[in-house]
Image (cartoon, rainbow, N blue to C red; front, side):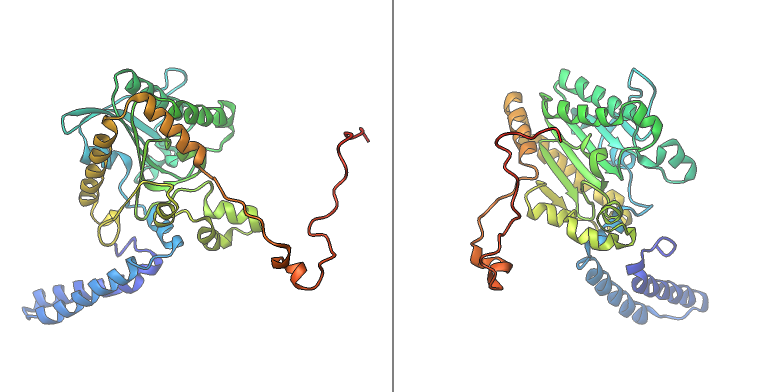
Length: 352
C-alpha cells in the first residue's frame, strides 16, 4: 500500500509507515515500544474507518481502478473448483480480454465468464488492457449458449473500462457484437448472475452484464460512460471528471438505492485489494445464494423477469408543474409563452 496508495490515503500511509519504523527500531535496539505502537495502531484503525466510511464517488472510482484490485481470474480460482478455461470464438481468434469456461461450485457445475485485466505491461498488452474485441464478446456468447444447452447457471464477472474502440474492432463489428450479446442474454433459458467487481463501463460491461441478479462490490461502479468521457462531452473539459462522477450516480450505494442492482457486497477494511481471499469468500456466498434463489424458477419465467428488468432500465416519471411554479410566471411574465411557438405540421412539410 505504501507504494500504491491513493491520494486520499496519504495520511493513513504516513501513519502506517511510522508504525513500521517503530517496530523495526524497537526490534533493532531491543526496546519495548509496544505501548507506543498500540496507540498508533488504534489511531490508524480509527483513521482508516473514517476514510473508508466517507468515500466520495470519485474516490470509489479510484479504488475500482486500483492496480492491485483482484482480477476475474484471481476471483475465479479462489471461488470455484476445477476451472477449465475455453478459448476462441470459432470465427476469428481468442481474445485475452475475456476469459471463460466451466467450473464447480459446491458440487454444482457452472459456466464462468469474466473481463480480464493484466498485472504488468506485458500481461496488459496480451489482455488488451482489459478492453474486449468483438471476438471476445462472441466467445462469451458461445460459452453462454453452451451453458443454456446443458442448463448450467452462468456467473459473469465484470471489470472493464469499456469495449475496445480501435478501428480493427469496428471493422469486425464491435457495436453489433455488443448489441447481439445483450439481445441473446435477455432470452437465455438459464439463470445468470452478474458480479461487478471493479469498473463497469458502458456497453463493454453491458455486453456481459445482463442478468437475473446483479451484485456489486462496494467500491465498484457501473455507468453508461466513464466520468472522464462524460466531462469531455458535457463541458469539453475532461478535468471535471470528479464533478461528472457525482452527477452520474454510478457507485454501488447509489445504484442500490435506485433499485438498479440487487445486492451490494461490503469490502474488507481498506478495500478488496487488501484481502482478496476474504472478498472472494463473500462473493462466493452471494453467488451461491443467488443460484439457490433462481434454481426453482422455470426458464420461461426467468426470461420474462429478465426482459422486464431490462425494459425498466432508465424509466422516469413525468409530472405537470403548475404555471405559477415556473420561473417566468413567478417573475410576473404570465403572458409570456412557456415554450416557443412551433410550426403547424399538420399539413406536412414542403421540401424547402
